[in-house]
Image (cartoon, rainbow, N blue to C red; front, side):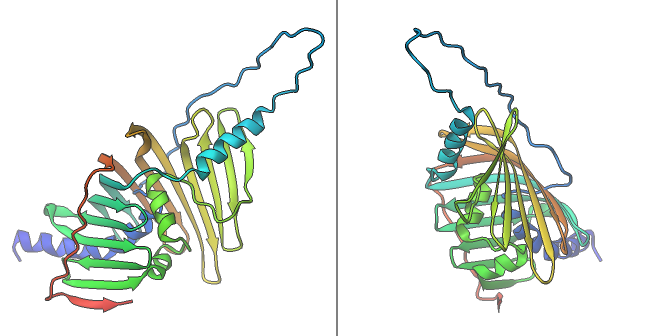
Length: 287
């Protein structure tokens, strides 16, 4: 067998496991080989002493309530964008496969998440299109197309998240399923927990600018328990939006995996195309 043929076989073998592993990672927007601590900006709240005339009585300032309201405003404010583009270097590791790929992500708000995965030899191995109700995967190395509902993506990730949830996770915005939030205030961070009988959430924010540093998702069903940790690092700002350039993800449970995603380029609100052409020669599979 020639050297090129051997490399092609290697690419095909890696791509089979790459597809499921990458889909599992996208809900946390990212790709990791180890657990890193999110960078936290230092912030100290100093007490201010105000002198007033004897006849004026000031009510004590509840700084905790102020922080809680400010954070609630951040959480409840919709993301102001129309499109997103990102190019990232990804490293993944699981019991079945490991390797490095380049990932291209495009999004049209509330409509489409488009992903291209390029592996060794600069060959595009897979292309993915996620809409609010469907998931389409072109496996170019195998010449197949998989068509399924959004429920299939939930089954792969083992997390009952919607299209909107996946979109928010990629952009680093917290996902909540109810209004019952529990706050814990520390010197330089605020943690928020929430959840329901299916999925539990944990988020850690910096206290000075409310940037998301960590997301934790936990789910348990009759078959298995899944825990996913996402760490958001290296924030950068463009078009008045803060974006984490480095994501670390760890998934434990029945399908453990670790991923690192380092964005080399990204932008918001620029014209994007979402090419997703299915060759008539490809074999179509429905799931």
